[in-house]
Amino acid sequence: MTAFIIRRALQAVVVLFLTALIVFLGVYAIGDPLEILLPGDATEAERAQVAASLGLDQPLPVQFIGFLTDILSGDFGRSFVYNRPTIDVIFERFPATLELVVTALVLSLLIGIPLGLWAGMKPRSAVDETIMTGSILGFSLPNFWQGMMLIMIFSVWLGWLPSTGRGDTATVLSIRTSFATWDGFTHLILPAINLALAQIALVIRLTRTGVQETTPLDFVRFARARGLTERRILLVHVMKNILIPIVTVLGIEFGSLIAFAVVTETIFAWPGIGKLIIDSINALDRPVIVTYILFIVTMFIVINLLVDILYSLIDPRIRVRQP
Image 1 (cartoon, rainbow, N blue to C red):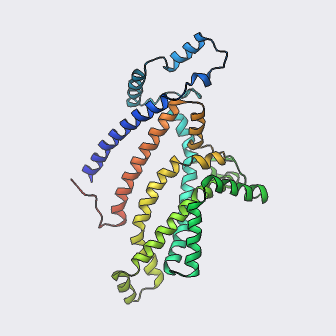
Image 2 (image 1 turned 180 degrees about the vertical axis):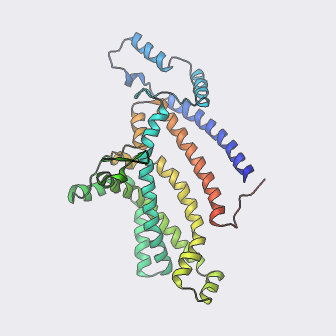
Image 3 (image 1 turned 90 degrees about the vertical axis):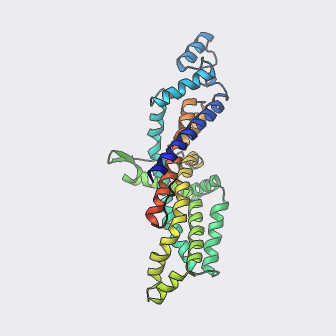
């Protein structure tokens, strides 16, 4: 396991370097941030002064080398727009995104696993057909359209839930969270549901497939022969075997939800890093864009490593292959 972790760490360094190079070249080839940061009547002297203060007057290779040097020293640069360290800007917004993603994943498990078990235990029944039809809709409907329909129904027509913003938050264990206030919790419901719908459909299909593949196996028949109840067989023996693909997919989806919660955060004006990256792209805030992408790539690498390690905890028969 130690050799595996070291090998993955070395691979991560290579991936991060290549990502930094590609993103840096791509981002710095797009537009001129001075056109956005400065008024139209700015003089050439003012433009030159701002360019020098931001390091934009240096050749591109020099800027990239300086960028890498700063990263190795823990400095990811300063935002052009916020005039603050970019990593501070991202970490300030990250708790809101994390709160939204965790809520969506919890909803997908609480709703998806029971529905998947129900459909898997009653194949080709009306219950199975209804649940699977709902899961197809969850996959098929565009995320932005779902969000607009949720706002239209629950905010505009019924007036039950707020449609935008994070609402009031409170501090719990030094972390500001929407769960600590009723206003914050009501603001969280719609964006979390919108983000969770596709994941609920995914969990339903994974669970149903796992149940149908596992129940005919010999160990399930042996458990029935011993007189165990169907409830115990399903929740203990069958669930233990179908959790591995669910953990695998949700581990990857966790990173994907954080990276691609942009649409949901934009529709519901949720103040997370998804909305931050959209605002930064519009403002050509290059340091924030590059730091955001490096942050997301690092998170994907860490999550995949944790999922690999979690395999052996769920099923001791699985071990990471040593070199």
